[in-house]
Image 1 (cartoon, one colour):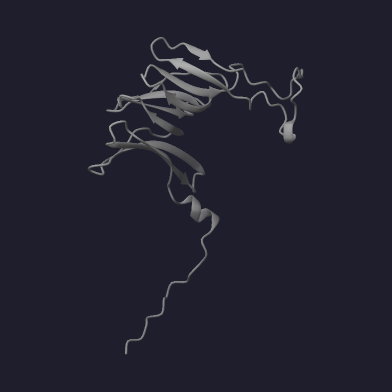
Image 2 (cartoon, helix red, strand yellow; image 1 turned 180 degrees about the horizontal axis):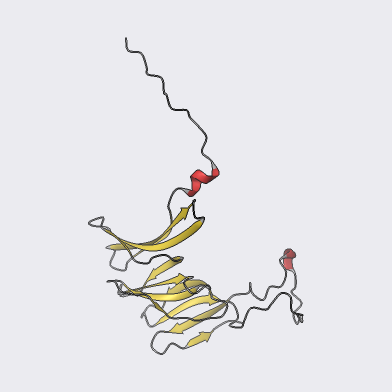
Length: 185
């Protein structure tokens, strides 16, 4: 009769910092041809207290992976309809902006430069010529220490405070000429 070995390692509960030691996939998008997946991977460095979110590409047939972005907060990737480009949000310049990255590699190109940044998106048009996204008003963020004139009846909803920065509108960017059109107000 065999005697079970006693576990010599002390067991402990999973703690808060343990959760930060794992990488997380935040979102994944399948390419139009169904052969690739682009996803964002978030890593926390507990020692330096830094968080990075980078984009990766995975080939479904071979399992080959390739890191597409480095050292920044890149997320919400979306394939162009022809699969040649990946549009995504990144905080490389401080505020989130839209970038365009060739699928076959190369440097990402910033395609928006809004003062308050992009809120969400991108969403490609079926012909791949336009990208829709949401953003706040393209004005400089107000200094909270400056006097503020309230011109709307909505103020301090649920104790949040001024909502001007929280209000998002729908915009469409034409890739042909870089023109941005605001659709809602």
